Each structure stands twice: as C-alpha cells, then as structure tokens.
Length: 325
Image (cartoon, rainbow, N blue to C red; front, top):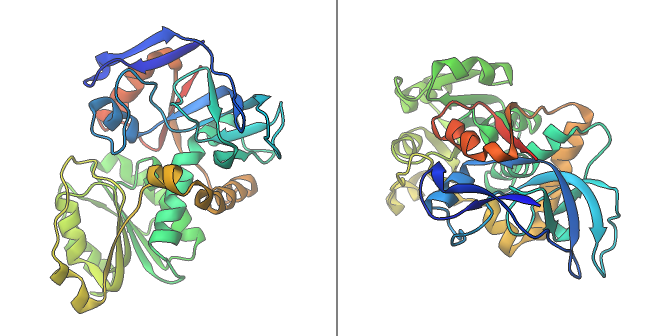
C-alpha cells in the first residue's frame, strides 16, 4: 500500500510517499480501508518534532480516518466487515489502510458522508470536550473561541450554541474569515491582529467577561484571555499554535475563583480512550440530525500531503482539510 512518511524532522520536504507493507489486524484490532483522513495542525507539529508524545522518524503522521472495515481480529465484538466507521487509528493515518483498537472506532450513522466522517474525530471530539468536559459550560454562559475559523474553532462555535451558550464570540487573524464564523453562529468576531481582544470581550459582555475561553493559540492571546475572564470563569488551553506559551501566576486565579484547565484529545487517546466515546457519540448524533455542520475547505490526494500541510501552515485554511487516497 502507499503511505506518507515523515523521514526526518523539518519542513514539508521531509514528507515522502512510499510503498510499504499493508498492516494486518492483530487480536483486538480492526483493519480499515481509508476513504479519507484529516489533516490536523498536530500533524505539522509532529513533522517538526514539536508535538507532545510524538514519534521519531520515520513514521506515518495523522490522527483520524474514515473508512470501511475490511478485516476483524480475534476477540473483536460489536464491529463487522463492511461497516462504515470513523476512528483514531494506531500508527498514523496518512495511508491507504490502517489498524485501530475498537475502543477508538466509531460506527457511522446513516447519512454521514465520508468528508464529514473524516473531519469528525479530532475536531468534533475536541470541540465538545473543551466546552462540556474541560470548560463545564452551562446554558446562558458567554464563550470566547480563539482561532474560530479553524477546524476545531468552526466546530466549537456551533457546539457552544448547541450546548446553550448565551453569547459566542470568535477571534480570527484575518478579516476574510470572519464571515464564515458569523455564519456558523457567532454573535461577534474579533480580529486579534488589529483589535484589543480583552477590551472588546469586556465590551461585548457588559464588563463581566467570558465564562469559558477556548485557547489553542496561547502567547499574547493567553494574556488577553486572562484580562477578560469572568469571575468563576474557565480558561481552557489545548494548544499553542503561535509557538509561544502563555504565562500566569497562581495569584491570577484564586481571587476571582477562576480556573485554568488543560485539555488534550491525544492524551485521552493514550491514557483514557474510553472517555472519548460520549463526546464522539453526541457529535455523531448531531451530524446525523443535521444540527451540526463540519466545514471542509479543501481535499487533496494522499500523494499531495505536503501541499495540504503547507496550505494549513500558511494560515490559508478555513475549517478542515482532508487527504483522499
């Protein structure tokens, strides 16, 4: 089969399409013929050697897939050959075939197409969990979603609405992306490159601040978030796409009963995989009912994985980018 390998840490030139032996499902595994796979910012960090818990070259990158089960290993129950699924596979997803542990395989409801299914695992599960699990969002609360035009961001804006948020504010780095975020349900959109984010959030919330802030950017946006976090608010950090960490002291939080919460779907996959299923099933139900729409902006052939990663790295993408074998 063909697969894309990271042959060394570096730029997109280290991504090479190679012929490799097709995987075989061992006991407790299923084999999936890939229909499409998502391209995530974490894949870029892994290629650069900056992803937490990342593999050493050579390795196949990628976190999530959608496809059809073609073989079932010994001891697997509840899944069958021919079943359409989405999954977090073992050993990377930029390939024509992958194996996965059933605990991280999710049967697809009727009506969920391949593009939606491939976009769903990372962005859908993450968007739900940063709001409901880590952020403990309750109806009526105000939410800020940083990087709201990205894969997780476009999903989180909608999930916040589905969970009953009273006000949803998105931040973007490009005015051209603001319209998409508003269309998905944001009450307001702030360009963090030219507007004072904290001041605008305080203005939009009548001085109270946001109850839940989702930060996958960190750096200066993290500092702005601290300034506009409401009393009893939760600041959820799940990445630092800017390359810069946010900094805080304990004194920033306890006087106003605020919380700083970290979240990583990758760590849940490794350490508590069963805990991801409630989010996966909830999001798949919303997708099947047409209440949630995943934004897919581009599809590339698997052999053009380098071009797909460059598109994301250069901040051109809105929503999700997919690879199709």
